[in-house]
Length: 380
Image 1 (tube, rainbow, N blue to C red):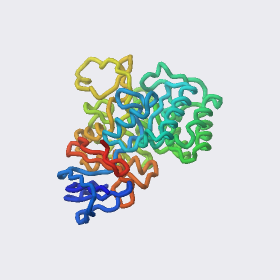
Image 2: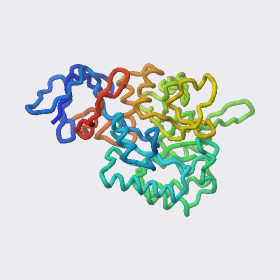
Image 3: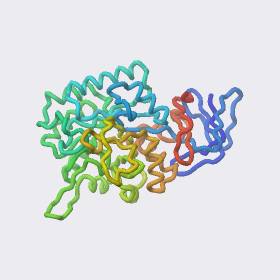
Image 4: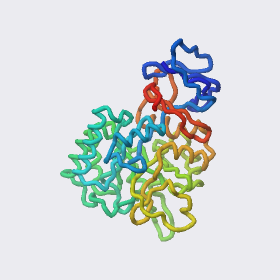
């Protein structure tokens, strides 16, 4: 049994000061200000720090140095030590069908061997995205027609481990792919990604389960209905539809999403439909010249100098959303834990509640992670 004491307990919309969280057999059994600590319990006194639910990263490729497709055990462990108690490795469209299958098999084997217990599913960033968008797009083997001979073996291998399928709704015959992916895993979520689709094209896929916008305002096109007149596109559609969650890559300079835009998105979407992601990649390309990129050392660039995800782990975006938008620690936990859990239908995590999995983290007011508790055990 573990008792986390002298804690500021982070609820979904308020704090409990001077609280205790009691954990037993991997579950939260009690929390609050008047908790009796049983004899023999291990005590973790956090000296007033914040105790909230473990972070859930639905979209990241790496730990900043290593891809999940190279060493999923190592990457999962690095993330866990940064407070990411649940993660969905993202598999990018620069892999061909056989490479996708090999990557999925490697991750499945790692899970089966019990070596990456915080991996809860796959985030399939592809295969059918718009080839005009995204880092490393020169190496996109999926530019041709939607072809069942290619995609079926990927979908079949991913099975119900694929929690999210990203796609560009404007791709010809995309519904053929959608119907097959949903037949294999009816619970899979669809996300509009790397796209310049019209609202009509996006909304046509909402009955199939499209309710996510991949890295909102990144790798999305702008449609001009008339010369020099801006029309509605992916970002506007995501903002307009209340059921669509918007992913945000929140770097410390505000390159992926301008700080003013971050504040605007929060104002329009509300705090229940914002999800922070790390979207870490590994390229180590050159940082472009210019004042705009000064200090942008948490962004990843491809070999052409174009943005290709981040070099962050999810605690980084939590720090940055506080800085750029004035969000509270409470709200940062909502963006990085509660909301992704709700999107995925994970009712046993993402918030502090009796009976929930004891995946918890301890942070200070700047969201520096002090401790991670995973399945009721302090991560060493």
